[in-house]
Image (cartoon, rainbow, N blue to C red; front, side, top):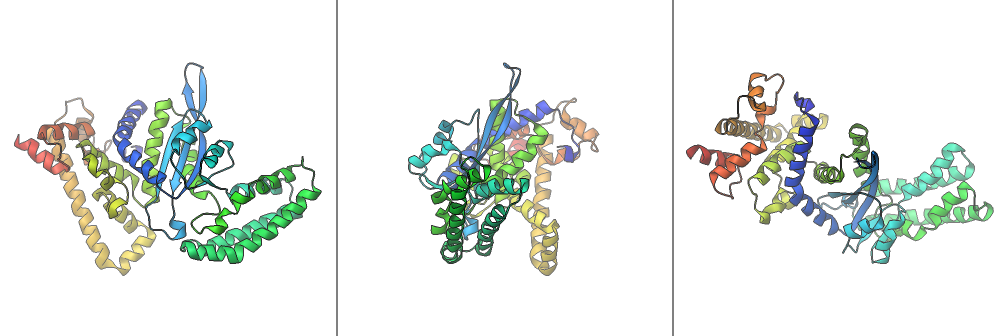
Length: 416
């Protein structure tokens, strides 16, 4: 809102966010279903401070992320990322989240996952976590042993970089030919180090972290769909960590659940190359018109081979404005000229309909939208969108639940 010149009270924004999260709940449930249908899930979690007025301080909740992303192994299937908020980090939450899942789970060494592994889920460990244990010691005091281990792990990642985006069979063959000998040699180095180090020293503990999980660490060698690390889930939480510096804490458990729903939609949009702001503006308007439950899949980002109009236009517009997009636009002007023309026409139509909506349901003298008319420099951008309340009232005035476009509802309202 601030980027559009709007100074709106935080409590008002929180209320709008809560209403938006409620409208998006059916899409969040569909994204969750898509994640749980995957053969492989990347999981991670991060702490989230939550206000606890009764105790006079903040409690520590957890935000979990579960991501389905096989594009590194050449898959063209859409990506899906599901977030879930819990008040604590007990294993019961994991068992509930992934109930019925029987594929590969790539995560950290948190003991709470053990119940899933005993129930039929296959563990895939993360080489980045093992490397981090050694790297922390190397930064503190570099030794020939830490240098050797880090270089050997780096060679494994070099192989992965060469086959990224290739089909599973090519990745499997490259790993068997190149990565497997490297890992066997690394294991010999680790075993030799453990024999001469004291079990209580930090280096021995770091090495033991890897050797105890060796089967899970090396599982990626035998399946080209698997990844060497859990960077997919860690990247999905990076935005949460950055945002936490600004919003600091969740106001309540309900606030944490709202945040998880919004993060689910935004991250799934970003993973599929869809502009989140345009997408959410588009689908909320559609959902407010009682979008049929049998057609929820049509609103999911990149599902069913189509995108909502606003999201599709926004994505192409962003590409056009980028450096690479401008270069492509110069080389293929006949393509981008057509796209730009269609985008402009669509935006003009949406703007006309939004303006008509505001006139059809004129607000009171003291309302925000009348202020926007009088002070356009302060409320620029507001006139481009009709408020949810207006859209809902116009939709109800039409008397038909299957109205799915703003224009149809407005025309019906004007006729009445």
